Length: 210
Image (tube, rainbow, N blue to C red):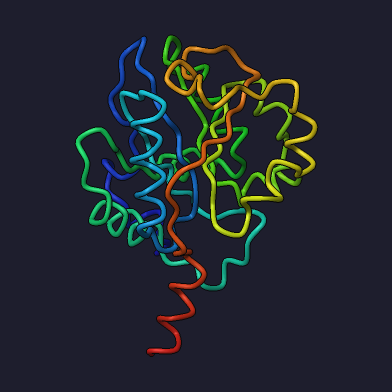
């Protein structure tokens, strides 16, 4: 039996929303979810004035090794235990639709849920490799992108290939509160408090203890 089949209907459903809502989309493997994810989420809610943030727990990142990837149901459950916030929802709906790439997810949400003001949220470490993502230029055309500073990527992320390609669409950080209302393409780089935790470090630590 696959990990996808083990998930409940609620795990694979889209959260409730209404037109006009400002919704942040925070995608990742969350393998495992950690304090760094929670920090970025809370900062984005506050700084961007969002009504909600959806954690999109992916079946698996195409750019990463899946040998240590825990079942989707386990990752969703752990994420919910960690991120207990009334405006944050955890979903693995991408698995239900067989979405492999983030572009497919964003395009589906834009078409299926019109009137919502979606913002794609990523850590600065992902901006460094964003140019390797499938149809990343098209993603930038679908919705605004908010990038939150991450340890190790503070200095090189703003000069990454994708950042340079999107330079003319960068929004000043002082406009964060109205960023969700801006049309794409637009992206913003948010500075703030950081967490040194990473999923890779946590997995390595668990292996050493085991």
